[in-house]
Length: 194
Image (cartoon, rainbow, N blue to C red; front, side, top):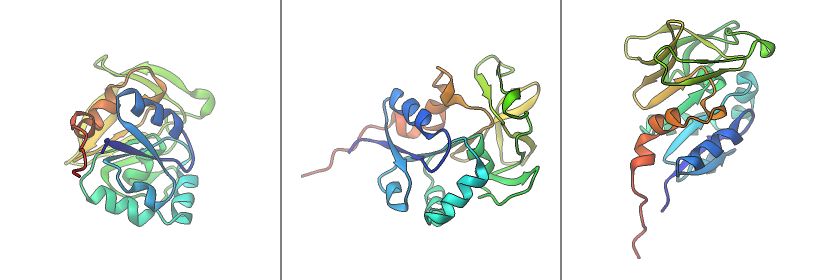
């Protein structure tokens, strides 16, 4: 059976993530209902509007299945609004979140839509595209900082959950997707026995 990455497809930039996943050689599955998570080997939470995504997650009955998916130990990539959903704490304003990464994030703290900008991570390894992006304002002891911009964390990981304040799917570079989803990308497809 081919490996698959689920992309939460309720609102926001899910189509660009699906294209990025296909570009790294893995099948993308759009997740709109709990059953869509069946067979997914990893998950992407895209950017968009986090409060709208929370309402749609609630409406579709996805909160419990998403928690179970993450608890199962499969890789997760959460970008921009997805990072807001995955964070332990959210400010400016506060809102509920899942707490999968021990970070505090401030919503839209890199500026409004008109203040969107491109940059490069401090180490030069990652092109960064910020669109109404959150800022990571606090990092817990169990969180690994993978990239910074102007000395601030912009790419973090705790366990198999990776969070980015920027939009890697909107750049030509697929390193963030490959790295965050490495267990799925590198694993051979499983052929069902007859």
